[in-house]
Image 1 (cartoon, rainbow, N blue to C red):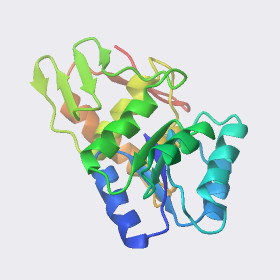
Image 2 (cartoon, rainbow, N blue to C red):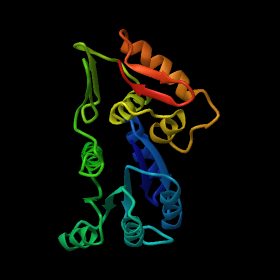
Image 3 (cartoon, rainbow, N blue to C red):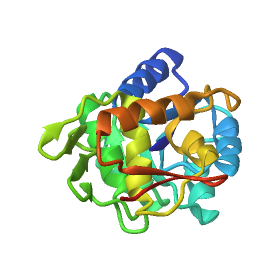
Image 4 (tube, rainbow, N blue to C red):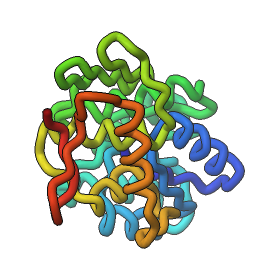
Length: 219
């Protein structure tokens, strides 16, 4: 899952980003509205976590721009303004959800995952293929009754492949969906992660390599 975090308090932003990455998300961070608008035009995010009171371009205007562009990205307003009328106003301009600060981190993760599963995102709560089951909300992967010790990145790659429902996913798309902007596009990250993931999944093989195209769930 790819998330854009828009938060002008750098220390808080970095702490939230670190926690979300530990939860298996690829997270890009920006600190003002101008950069947020630039990012959403070049990257397809599953969820935009948007502080309402940010410099440059106000969070309300960023939200309106995301919604008005027809982007499939879900918007979660994250703000210190917790009054009812603030929540109503935030939802009224197109935000999909609203969470006042300070918030419980576990709730933030749960809200982000819930948004990614809303109609239009097409992500079911639990992903399955044969004897393989992946539960993103609980961070559990099981095959043939055996829990798999996946790293956050291995989990993210497997989640992307299962969400594709058998369609081929290119290495470039995996890098886009499971890594963030800090990833080196010329690295062997996808190939290395795929090799380790296949080893942990065991036999019979679940992930197929499609020559000159990418990877898919099959078998």
